[in-house]
Amino acid sequence: MIRTFIALSLALTPALASANEPAAESAVATVPAKDKQLVIVSFDGAHDNALWEKSLDMAKRTNAHFTYFLSCTFLMTRADGREIYKPPGMKPGRSNVGFAQSRDEIATRAGHIWQAHLDGHDIASHACGHFDGKGWTKADWQSEFTTFDAALRDAWKKADKPDAEPEGWAEFARTGIKGFRAPYLSLSDGLLPALKASGFTYDASLVTKGPGWPTEKDGLPRFGLPLIPEGPSKRPVIGMDYNLFVRHSMGVENKKDSATFEARTYEAYRKAFDKEYAGDRIPLQLGFHFVEMNGGAYWRALDRLLTEVCGKPDVACVNYAQALPMIEQAKKKADRSAF
Image (cartoon, rainbow, N blue to C red; front, side, top):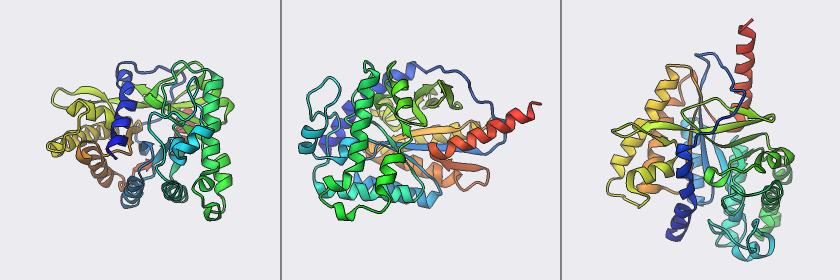
C-alpha cells in the first residue's frame, strides 16, 4: 500500500500546474437560479478494494451517486500488462500507478465495479497507466481507449473466473463507459477528436476559475473541477483531495494534524456549496482519489458534507452521467423563459 501511495502521489503531481491554467470553452449553459443544486463527486483511479467498499457505503448512507474514473491497469496483472498494454511512445507493460497484485484482486475489483453499476453510479475512463498525454495524437489516445475497453471487457477472464462474469457485463463494457477524465488533467489537441470518435458523451478534464456550468466544444460537453477558496488566506485551490494534500502538508503524509486538515477542507467545501446554494446554483464538482491522504482527512470532510446536504429536497448529489440530462433540461427551461 505504501508503494501504491507513493506512486499515486508522484503520478498526480502535474495536476497542480492546472490550478493556474483554468480552461476557457464556448457555449456556457445558462440555467435559472433556484433550480436544484447539483453536487457532483468523482473518484480517480478506483483501485483500492477497501475504498470501493467504503465509497459505496458512503453513497448509500448519504443518498449520493458518484462517478468512478477507472484506470484500466488495475484490471490486469503486471504480467498481463507486458503482453497487452503498450502506452504511446513507451515500452510494453509500463504504468505510473502499477497493476493489480493478483487475479483475486481483479475479481474483487470487477465485482465492486459491477455493484456500483447496479447501484446507479457512473463508471468512466481515466485511461490506463496514468501517463501525461499532453503530446499525444488522436491515434495515441485511441490506443489508450482501445486498451481500456479490452481490459474492462476481459476483466473476469483476467481474474481467471470467466464463469463468475455477471449477465450483462459484456454489454456494460461495450456501451456503458461514456465519460472521461485525463490523467493529470493534461490535454492535447488530439484528445477531443479521439473522445468523439470513441463515442464518449462527456469529458471532465478541465479546471475552471470557480464552479461553472459544463461548456461545449465541437458538440461534446466538458466539465471542469473548480478553484475554491481555502484556508486562512482563502487562496484558491483545485477542489480535489490531492491538491489540498499538497497545500496542507507539501504532499507528505501527516496524520498528526489530520483533524485540522479535515476541518479546513470541510469549511472550504461547505462554503463553496453554500455560495452556490444561496446564489445561482451552479453545480459544485469535487474530485477525490482512492487514497486516504493525511489520515483520511479529505474523505471524512466529504462524508460530512454529503451527510449534511444530500438529503435536502432541492439538492441532488449526482454523478456526471446523471447531471448531464438535468442540466440540459434546466437549460431548455431557461431558453423557454427568455421568450
